[in-house]
Image 1 (cartoon, one colour):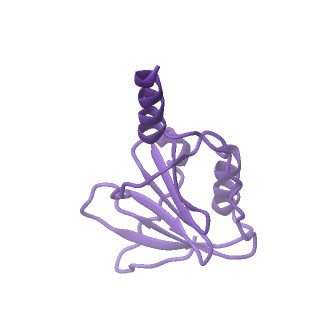
Image 2: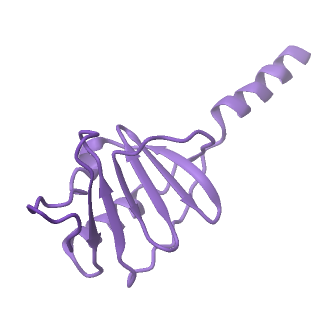
Image 3: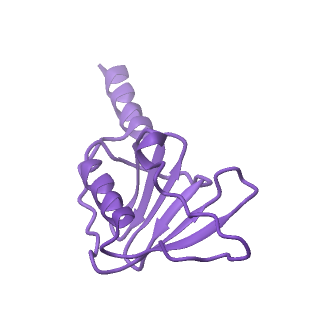
Length: 129
């Protein structure tokens, strides 16, 4: 019985419990989008409220509010979006959010966030989306 208790305790530590989180996203605050898809070409741009990209981002975060796990490790994000309230990082099939309740991770398909790209414009580091 003692061995079962130890195994159960260790599985909680290693695998964590999944949670449903509700990300409170201000609908009137823009997001900074940063991408570094190929690790050699960083780009940044602003996602303004009431744009198609902003609405897709809200929908993506709203649809992915279950099965989050507490995350202790750091990732090198290929894509990140942030504002004064929340930071969301995407890398491969993982999304990590860092907000006032802690840091959590969630499995996601890369194709689900493929729309999060800054359009290419010559001689400009920042643009508005």
